Image (cartoon, rainbow, N blue to C red; front, side):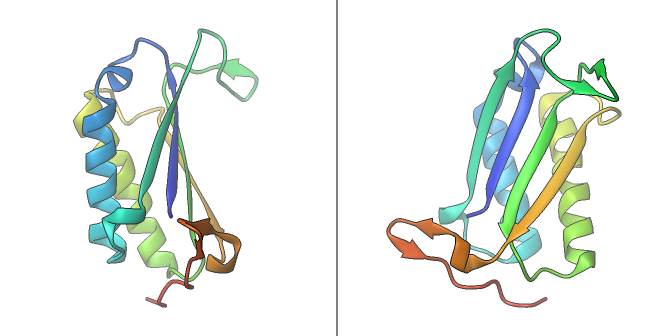
Length: 124
């Protein structure tokens, strides 16, 4: 854990560089939180035209939904979200303007990975 789920338009630059994005997002998560990279999950869902909306209108830029363990400070979460967006723009070559990042927190006791419940995150 965590799980970072990208929702991206099919055939966009970010769709072509998924492996590079996955490695870069893993590195950012580990650098910012101190968590080991072995549990960082990154997934991509490519969407067809007119399949992603904001304010009832189609958007051309991706979205990132991250699920992380509860316990990080507001400052750590802010830095994490800024670095994730910056990394997405740098690796994909797509503008950060229009990209969105959403973070959801859940307790470690609500996560089962490799047959074991995860410990709670260490407080920042």
